[in-house]
Length: 208
Image (cartoon, rainbow, N blue to C red; front, side, top):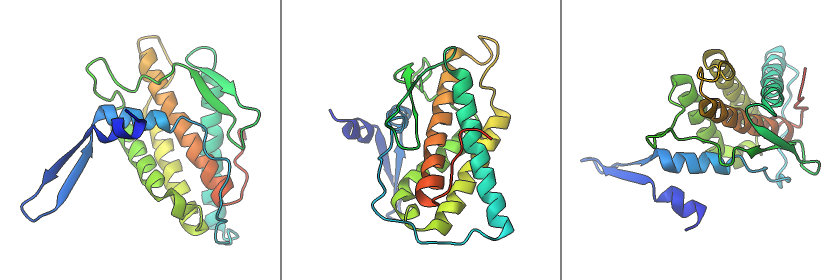
């Protein structure tokens, strides 16, 4: 069974009396999809973004917030390397230098088979990632929308970072929960990197 088939097999559907259909992805399918996002992204963007000026002070501030969040993600991953996760730097990767070697896969699911990232801000960050993944091709060709999405993702990440402890005592949070949260950090870093550098043609620094 392919990865796509494994994800699709965990969809459930519901038909309402007005004829509307509602589809819901189960936790197992969500964990498979999140793990797919851990892979290095495509190196090329065939369509160049529509030029947009970010000379306005508000836009510059928004861009800096995104760059700061990207640098924070990179800092968290570097800090975790060797203790919580094991990273590998890909020298031939374009603007996205890391993959997580261990654990592989990330322990997205708890022992009961349900997603372990259940905090409201974790859920909102995952929802934001789903939205960006769904609109990604369009965002890469429209810098204004790309900037707005990058800002929204950055804000969701900051809320997550402030509310959810990643490092701490071995049981608080648990090692597997820390690894799951770091997986979410890496996915956020990947999307911010692509939105900032691929969609906005701006630098996505790994440190500030």
